[in-house]
Image (cartoon, rainbow, N blue to C red; front, side, top):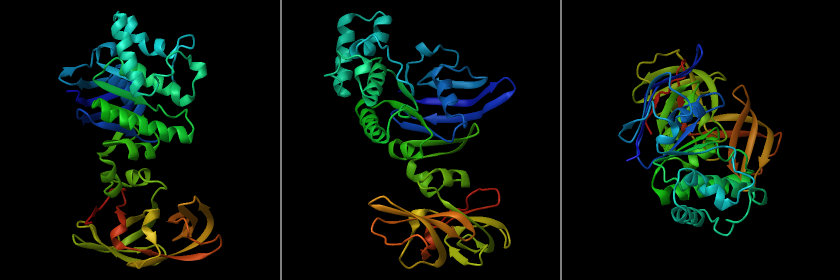
Length: 362
């Protein structure tokens, strides 16, 4: 069973600590995504699991083995990088089988494994081509095939789709998700793109400055973020944040006053808070429609983006200059309009002065 565990993992470069004592348990067969902004430590953490970066402190376990001191080649992992790293003078077949040949695997076994992987990745008609004759998506599939033939316990992906255009990224996301179901093995995937994380993962690990901010399923992180960082990072477009203060606090509900004078009551447990405490109200762009709500906000629309099935409105609301609202594609709001936003209390998020989330009751 290819469980992966990090135990108080620390990484320092000189005197600079970039990974801060991370404990993490990943179960066999999960598709786990490490996500966060540039510099958060997600690729470093992946490389520590792979054995390409030594831990300064702590342990890495894969299955029932402590692999902390093992070389990368002995860990039972296969890694797919952002760059395809294909040998230009070799064919697809030769690139996919190269690692096996270097390990002394007999020709018949190499051919069998390469043929099986090529069929899975729809490369079986391209085995005689060289990389220069392949598209970006095909090259990335060859790199994935090279990993598959090794039959690893764990697959590691380090931003493998970053070099592809938007259409190919969608196609490859589907390919990798299908591959995970077929192989039924553990996959750990690094990306800065939260859309990739939301659409592919069984479990998301949100990182910030070398710390784990939250671990959970995509829906858990979307509906119950632990803090304002996760709330703002998960979801596209990002959540709107409005400052204000608490009017009344209770375990059964909270009333707040926003800085523009609007009062709103919402089913959020704020037990322990006090009247007058500073808060931040979070509203997702998709949660403000033209139906009845518990309170209203006024927005001055400055930009409209029409994407066919969806329209985005950008403008000023509650003192914010870049407030965003999602509407159906047929919405006829125009630049310069003033619109009333109806907000249900059940769609609100609330954060204390330290950015920690109050518990939603819905």
